[in-house]
Image (cartoon, rainbow, N blue to C red; front, side, top):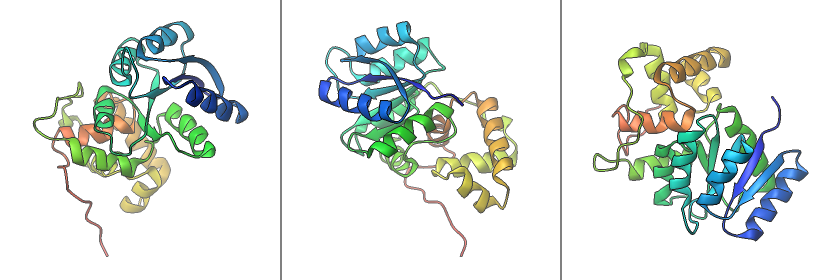
Length: 225
């Protein structure tokens, strides 16, 4: 797979410069920068990046609203949210809006580059354990419902089992171990789940698992042994 083309949206010039240097040094092209959500939307229209690194808190238009508008216009684009706090209440809303994951701004250079590449494939959710905590903390019947309403009846019993475990944050390798299947088989199940439920990636799968009641906030995965 070719390296992703990245847009960096952050109101702090120092952050943008630092991230650009980190990614460029690791062979990832940064096609542009934006200082607020409005600029980010315009830049995505003009530059067509594969991945947007999007700060949540920005002037003029915040990253959450910008994410909604970008994904409405460019559904193939991946948005990776940037935050200072690992339990920022806006991150859950961003995932519900379609963002593919999130990163803390103090990540290591190696992790930043790896995260951009991962989110570009749609094959992995960034920091699934933290994202799971977010969903458990902020998902509730009173929360605004995201635009992800799917009929789970289209899934086979095995696919439903895989979706449930994905909702608990398990990676493909962990799913294979839990279900005693090969990773190739797990990938096939995951791909079919995404296709049947028209999900873009694992982030939406996690949100869907909670919003449909497949998993309830605070519920923990029961392990044998």
